[in-house]
Image (cartoon, rainbow, N blue to C red; front, side):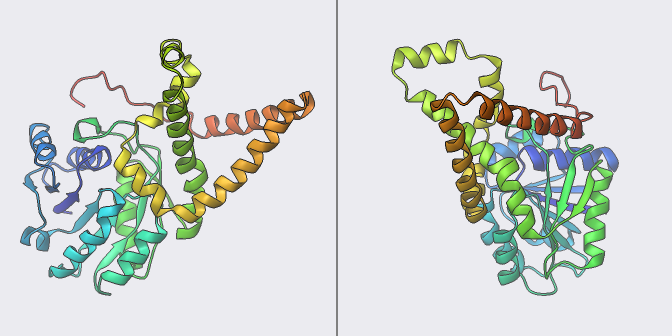
Length: 301
């Protein structure tokens, strides 16, 4: 790998750039972002070698193209990339949290000779922007690959090995399974967090101020993800609409069951619900116990 391009230089894109630079300082990193402000920040952080607001002929020499933009930009990017004479060795990949819609657009737009390997690193924080990325974000995290018609064994292996070099564990998965899993483990938690903060914001002014002032760690921790990038999450929710709505129906049913237990003073049912979920939570923590959270206060990230 000698020449790579990152389109969209936020938290994930800038972390990819940092890890690549850490592994091989000779790699040429082209950074594309439609925000001049973001590009200037990236230059100051020395994240790349070349900086562009638009894709141009430099893309012809690129071996791997990472798409790290909001999902609403994918269709336009596929159309632009399809117009260039990409090398037969060039691989387009992405980091999007939804796959069914992404793959549908890719297969409808990209010609058969253009390689596309859909991928999704299960990593991130609620922070955004190139200054929020850091080396090691992907270490010991899962990277899910959902191959499509534009993927072949060689391109999948190349992308797998690249993410392995960042410290990722690799899982090959069907796109529909991926989107259903993400709906319950990531997308709905964000919806709930955004919604509960919205509920708090609509309380009477004096009560709202008290909620903010006396928020316990539980409320702060639970609502942390409500500070995530709104454009990105708008796109994710709408792109994964069907699995999310299906899971929300089940969640609503379970919530009504919990509500009825409270109304009926059903102590046994409440205890059983809390005991069962505590065990599941314990297993979740054990699965990720060796994952270190970033220290945003440290210098030279």
